[in-house]
Image 1: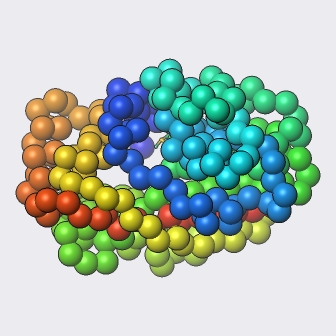
Image 2 (image 1 turned 90 degrees about the horizontal axis):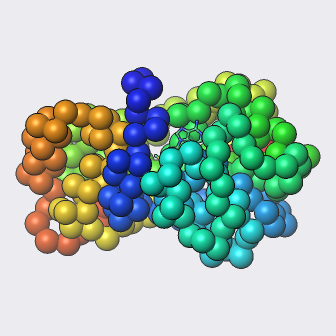
Image 3 (image 1 turned 135 degrees about the vertical axis):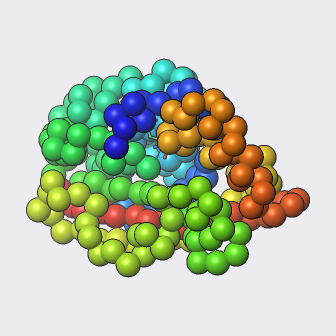
Length: 233
Ligand SMILES: C[S@@+](CC[C@H](N)C(=O)[O-])C[C@H]1O[C@@H](n2cnc3c(N)ncnc32)[C@H](O)[C@@H]1O
């Protein structure tokens, strides 16, 4: 994977905040330990996951390396500059670490060492990814058209755990949800993806124009599935 992509998101921070889907509350409940109070959102981006955690009444520490992304995080959280490999949080001070759409960008071994250090014994690590339900219709056309990686058909059949850096047992659940949208929002969603951000300008324009030719006219729902994994530490 192109290493420039991991830290490319800030160039499209506004599009990211406006057009990426949120996460269902039930998926968060699934990855949190009973009685959780203080949670770390690692690679928090613009705070999509942070806001859901705050709305659940939790105390949230949001760690994000990119300045443009970090400034958009809900100020009710404790927002810190940092990385998964170097987390500016005290030992054993959180009940859970949650990671939305970001674990694959981390150095796995170093990130896991950070997680083990900051989570109290019996706490959890929860990993979540929103993937497009590409079962049929325009989502299937869109996913094919743009060579989408985060699509349900690619994750549905795998029971492979999300990281082999831990010997812990993982549990997994899928959570369906929908995002109200129009063609402009789908284009913004695509424009906030690292693979598109790092494209040369001309290629990006062609790519995004193609998207408009596939999605429906007017308003519609985007069918998302949150692929959620949890392990107890
Ligand atoms: C696809 S975004 C996900 C943002 C957010 N968690 C969400 O669910 O919307 C990936 C985020 O991971 C951040 N990131 C990349 N490498 C990282 C690292 N090594 N440590 C922490 N965050 C990292 C990027 O800056 C970006 O904000």
